[in-house]
Length: 192
Length: 203
Image 1 (cartoon, rainbow over the protein chains, first blue to last red):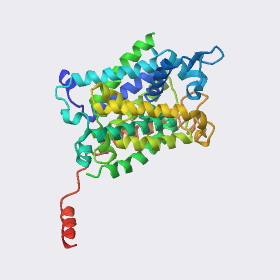
Image 2: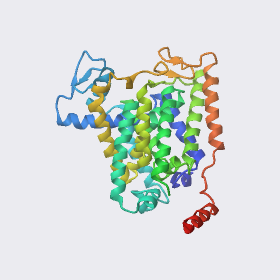
Image 3: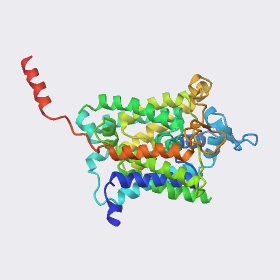
Image 4: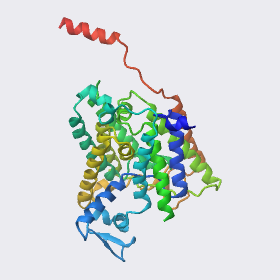
């Protein structure tokens, strides 16, 4: 039991089964898992700490909060409310995921080689060892991924996993679109 | 408040599994997208199939009362998905796996999250000017599912067959696919490379 806990990586069956349990338990107890919205919430928390009037209490709004930003103001001020109260389920969930990754890393009996820890092998084989180039591209990738996820209204966890689990059309559409773009781009960028 | 404690426990569990499964390692994501390594595809298919099967069976038996939350299908899901796919292939991260990898101390995950915060910020800024465009035109009636969730506001696309059969059928298809797919695709055998080499020499 302890040995499988400290293993570097689990086999596909254990991983798939436990990942499935995570998605099932969350939808049974609270709500489906989603991550990308919390990037907006963190942006909002930072922005709101710099300007006092981004998020304001508004008794007329459905959720009790309003924002001068159209996106944060949508759905009755749902995002505005979570920015004003960061100690909410969805935000704490994502922050706790960081601790989960850390726990897994700390308990690994065999760790990823330090060299692989900032630049994957497949990147080095195609573009050399300079981490700076990798960081530049990964930063661009981050911009595209989160911009795309917000336009789509969810990401791999919210649309693909939670969505397809509920047989949601949005989930199937998102999965088709992401793979349709990602496979050719990966094939072109990483030939070796 | 109890929900916040649950969030801590569930988030910890989810981040832990994402890292242990190898999903938070961009090497595996990129090799999946290059169609070289299907281990992660097998994991995703099994996870979706297994959770979906139990979700619909247990709720039809009244053992759980699931908190269904179906997202709207609209043109932007496709357009956003395409943009997402490009960034996903470049970086090897998606939002969830980058957060788990950040916890595990990956520097490139840290940079990705920085880029992600900026990308989400750009969207916040432009949303007001695009919200009334065709990007937000609904598809399939908006919040639509194949199987009946029992929620009136959602459109059910296959309502002549009981929900457990519809969702169960799709789920079993996913699980069977997960078992059938090979883990790794071997690189092409050497002879073809030798052939290419002889041509290079002649020219």
